[in-house]
Length: 32
Image 1 (cartoon, rainbow, N blue to C red):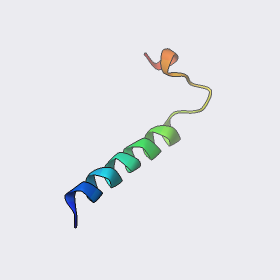
Image 2: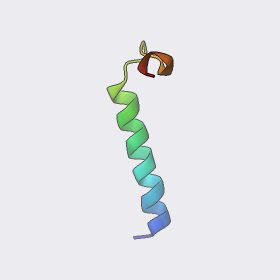
Image 3: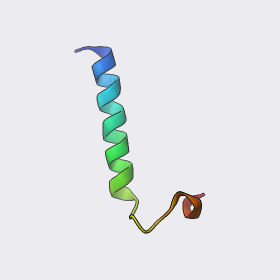
Image 4: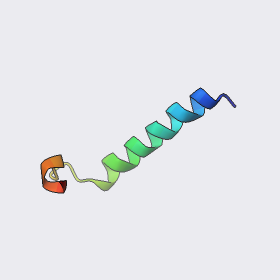
């Protein structure tokens, strides 16, 4: 499999997990 495609796919998964784990109420300012 293409490394570039795997890299993009990995970032997409991380972004999806981050969105799911963080409620929309929680802001980045509150996290930091």
